[in-house]
Image 1 (cartoon, helix red, strand yellow):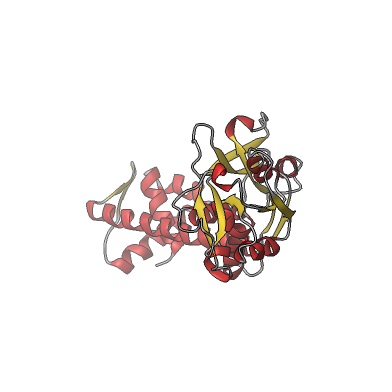
Image 2 (cartoon, helix red, strand yellow):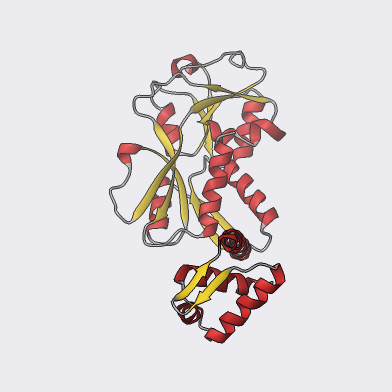
Amino acid sequence: MNIEQMEYIIEVAKCGSLTKAAENCHITVTGVSRAISLFEQEIGMRIFIRSRSGTTVTPEGQSIITKASRILKQIEELKSEAQSYREMNNAKLRISTIPGPISLLIDVITELKKEFPNSRIEIKENSTDAVIDDVEHERSDIGFFLLKEHHLPTTSDLIFEPLMKDNMVLGVSVHSPLSNQSSVTLQDLKDYPFVLYNDPYIIAFVNTLDKPDILFQSNNVEAILKAVKEDIAVTIGTDYSFRGYTMSQNRGIVTIPFEISAEDPSYLWSVTSRNNTASEAEQLFVKRVKNLLLL
């Protein structure tokens, strides 16, 4: 019993003709007939009744054909899964992102590299405009950025998918008087110095305060977290930007949500090109990011 025999009996059942089935399978009628006879001998059951008018399935043969169809479907699924693994293990994925999700994306990259050690995943930080431009001009395969929906570019060449509503949080030392609060407003922070990641979205958010005390702005995450941990200043970011930091090496920091109106929320978006079919790597990467965001 082999795969070809099962393919032949399914095709004969579909066509009701040995001749037509042989044509569709690109084999001689004799070859199909012999394969079916051997199959019937092996299982000790007659599957077809053959006559001059055609070939019909016996009642007991119908059950065999149904099971053979199921087996062939499972074999195709196995082949597809193996092909997907081969593609992923040799995939190259170029990612462009704003700074905020970096920690989250690195977690996904680490996870995928363990599963697919030969894959090549490149990631670079950019501004929102540069992320979108990278994907539009095919310098990157996928991008991640933060924006309000009505600020999205009006282009038919890109596909935008909202992944998560933005939730701004305050990062403070566990020794800060604010650390036990369940939520804060910007006005609660008017007497606190800030250390901020050099991100236009975060800076614009803080600048809604009248003359905020910004101690420094930096692209050095470790410097910012050190200043916060030692209670020199507070910082602001999206909740997902703190994942991996507050939960591991920087346990001296807690995050507190802001009381913000949800009338015009921002979202973390993924962007891909409509001109290119999404690869297995792109689809799997976005799926893993979504899974982490749900934790």
